[in-house]
Image (tube, rainbow, N blue to C red; front, top):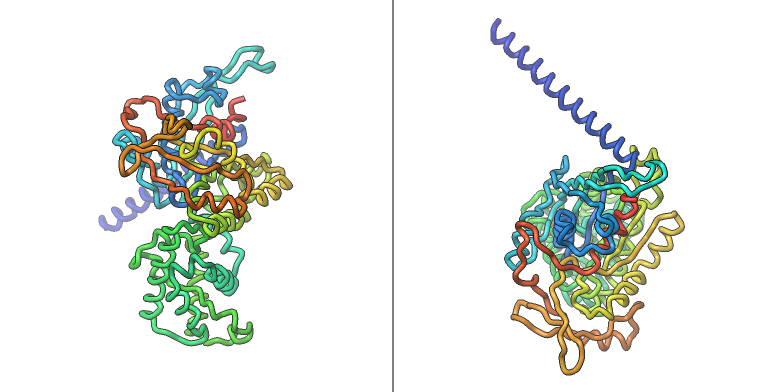
Length: 482
């Protein structure tokens, strides 16, 4: 009898623990909901395509806020008005802690922070003095803003349009994309192989695995060449033998020659039916959970775009970026936050598009880069304005890596590259979508990869140079400190 009583007692204890966990979770959710209702809690989503500098920007943003007395944040009112009192960093429930300290250590050693490949996040508790007001009779009170930062790869956003696209439609889109000159030059033999495959025939699991792994290689080569419209986006970080390999699918380019009746009547083990099932499973297990658990919780969104890199890679890479942004931005749930929506289903009420790494061009070109960024997302801005969403465009360098020097009678940039210190020259940056003459000049530009400035002492604080990061902070958070 004793073992039975012991088991019963253990079961009761486990049940009590679960009840306590549920109670704590419910209390935390209620507290978060109240904070959100009173504008004391906000979720900021930060994303960008690979190489845009997302991890560096988040690291710099946290450092600037934590060490605000040393930072240059003149465009951020709480600092300018001496109302910021302190910033505390802590973990965010349900996600991996953003590797802030690792990023600071890397910058202090003259290296860029290692890019994050998965979702991460953190919570910043920002303590500040409120400005004097009529209701407070001239006495500023102490308040707090709980800022959730959610970091996720921009490539994940590329998968969101798939939720409104069935497998056949996706194959058709791939057929159009793969006809581009850059993609043909990267994977001509693979594309021809895809075009030759009959969707109605059957192939072995091993053959499908081989094709899927060839597709991974092709997608990663496209990314290396500077293309951004890559779907499925998560596959850019997939391992050939990882979880994604259990449900492989490929775009069947010959599907455009099949009638709807032929596809519907295809046998269950045909390549079309197998890939269609795996495609739907991918949406259910990867894309939908991200959309529901992360993306729909975001109040405000920062999207980083390496406009200069796309310009330097040529017209096709630039057009590919523009198409990618158009596709991605259709997934944003625009609209102002109502009181109920703050508790139930937050919606993005402000989006900031930021062209990154503007320390690679001279100051008199910064506004041109900003204007070009605005032109890239012009269509999305119109749609957002119609839905009363605040859309802003900026140009930023999260860590400034260049200084100004005189070179042959003209101002130029100087910075540390992987080959050593060097003078950096660049053509004029067009404010609008480049014309043919612009592409001829841009084609001669040698954009070089910069290293962080030397001598940074950041472990115990210290100033981290930037360009317009204070403007980004004001665009995203400024109204919450009024």
